[in-house]
Image 1 (cartoon, rainbow over the protein chains, first blue to last red):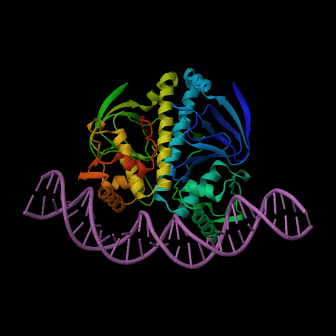
Image 2: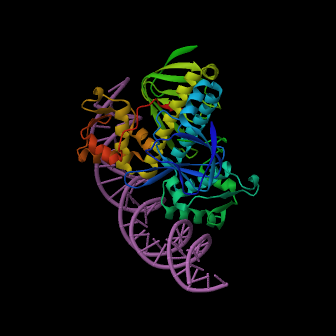
Length: 212
Length: 212
DNA sequence: CGGGATGTTGAGGCAAGTCAATCTAAGTGG
DNA sequence: CCACTTAGATTGACTTGCCTCAACATCCCG
């Protein structure tokens, strides 16, 4: 029924405009989901990590976006058709997935708000806080964030250019809110200040992300 | 079990940071969903019309955003707790709602892409096409769009200012792509050109919107 | 015929984009 | 172990699309 699989860094779990025949549960590693536009631009709709679900849980089998491994990724895979058939007979699982989906909708509303109404520094602050919340390092003490994705990935997620993202990092460092010992490791030195900058009154509740 | 209700224009179906105790099915009229930020800014996450579902289908009863009637709105309302309990025992309905939710997630990914990677003119073109697709006038012949929402609403949906939206309308009219006999009635004179501008290769498939 | 809400238009400024150069770190092969 | 390559990240100079602010037009509803 289910099978384990390993996707190497930079390989595709599924690709935009092709059929998805499987449903994936991420066990380890990180995946980015993106849409490519006709003019070559890219929008990353989300990053998924351990515990998150992605793949063909939808009416049409056609993939709306591409899922690419940012690191080596271990997943548990199910056949799409089998999975959907199983779902229709098991109200409890179906209900839990529905809750997951509604959580995802709320998370996306947050991101829509971010893209529609925030400027570059605020977007990055929010991104760092959400990352720290979803994938905490050091068990939350001395909060730090590992960023396996590139600056280009972050830019395409936040709707900016690489240069703007880089300048935003510098600004946060200058303000003393963060430290950047390496480009892909961020130490959060002043979480309350980041909260204020991001415009968060509270952190969105923990949830399982759903990528389609 | 269920009851009909009428919400007058400008009244709230539910309000951000309060408990939602009902699930609504829109029968007639249009609703806007928005989030208010601490600094007073507003992001409209979506517009809902006949056939769409909104309300407390989620883990927490707390509303993430506000739902406000743009026109007089007739709805069918269910008690949230009853509805959720009913769902857990009926896999078929639960499954259909899950499909609705995944459709909504894809629609939101489109909007995220719009906000992240499109400029004013392209955003408006896309908005008009989607509106025409979801709420066609004249049965699709001689395509026209009714816009019961204000320019400020459109601006807050597309992540721009009122002025920019107004200028974008003017530009589309100057190009001969649309006509504006009244501010809230748009005649689509050149749909293919609008498609090109919006960066659509194809229109997203028809779906029931889900507002939370 | 006012008066308030909504929409349009214009002038000027600025945040972020563009283009281009430089720096850094991680491989890779001799 | 070191030169060379390359992808990624940073920084700087310049440009621009959109925002801001302000004035004006239009529509509605009493």
